[in-house]
Structures are given as C-alpha cells and as structure tokens.
Amino acid sequence: MFSGNFECCYFELMYTLPPCDTFHLNLKTFIEGRYVPTTNLMVGDSIQVELRNNYSPYALVETSEGYLNDSGNCSLKYYYASNGTNYYIVIKHKNSLETWSISPGQTFVNDVLNFDFLSYSQAYGSNLRFLDSVPLWFGIYSGDVDQDGEIDLDDVLIVYNNSNNFLSGITDLNGDGITDLNDVTIVYNNSVNFISIRKP
Image (tube, rainbow, N blue to C red; front, side, top):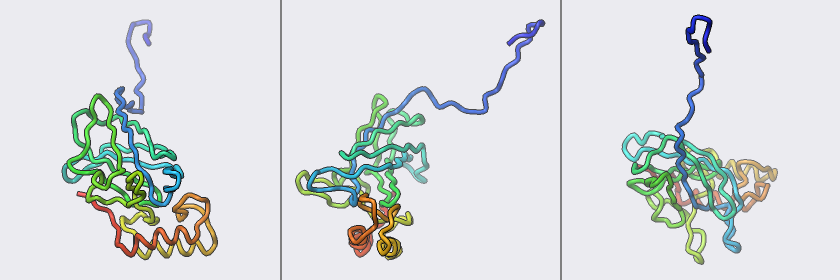
C-alpha cells in the first residue's frame, strides 16, 4: 500500500507458515486389542506419529495425527522433515504402548517414506505383540491406559474397575464400545509379562 508520497507500509503476519514441501509417511501397523484374526482386519482408530532425531537426546522433529484404518494403513503428512535423514518413527495411541521403529532410523526418499510394524524386527527392541500366524503379523501392545510407558497392575485395575460398570472410553481396548472381561484379559496378559517401552 502506498501513500501520496509513495511511502510503503506493510502488515506483519503473526503466524509462521509451514514450508511448502510436504513429506508423506505411509505407515502400516495393527493394534493388538483392536485386531481381529478371523478377518485380518482391525477396528480403526486415531494415532499420533512422531518423527524423532536418531541421536541423543532424540529430540522431537514433528508430530502428525492420522487415522489407522481397518486394514492397518495410515497416511501422514510432515513439513519439517528432510530427505536423506534418519528418523525414529514413534507411534502413540490412547491405550497402547508407545512403540519406536528400529535403529538407526528411517529415511524419506523423494519426500516419501513407506514403513510397517508388521514384523517384530521392525520395532526397536523387537517390542511388538504376535497377532497372527497366517499372515505372520505382529502389532502394537494394548493396555497402557495411563500412558506411563508400561503395562502393569495400575492399568489392570483401571480397566477392571471400568469393566464392572461396562464403561466405554479409554479402557475399551478392543474397540467394541464397552469395557468388559475381554479388555481385562488383554491388559492382564501383558502386565504379567512386564511389557514396557523399549527405546534408545
């Protein structure tokens, strides 16, 4: 905008726009409690997926949220990644165990990264639950309802107490709309095996 004296004035935007480049992560995984072996499908749900540096202190680069569909597929977009750089992929879900990808990390090529957590070797510390023999698939552990990084007696008690009243919400591990004995069984089995986060 110009005045009669041709002096320029401008407005400063208070919002920083993201870079124009978009990086695409095509992820495939299943969540233990929500997976149905007879159909090889799962009850879909939202997940958060972090990109983290592959060197200490493994700082967060960016987080994206997406919908993990019944086939275990989720497409996510990132704006601050770069090609040729190794990142740890970290999956977070409301009542499942935080799960990290294998070392030394994964790399975008031409702005695209395809990665799956279907084999135990794809997770850091092989920290995945066996789900199915045909096809041979592994998935993310269910039951960390208090999100403290381990599936333990605290989680069992939370799920058990809610199962007495058939409540829904975070303690519904299999996604059927209520918390019941099926959910208690899932969290209990993982708690007796002292399942916890494995990360660098």
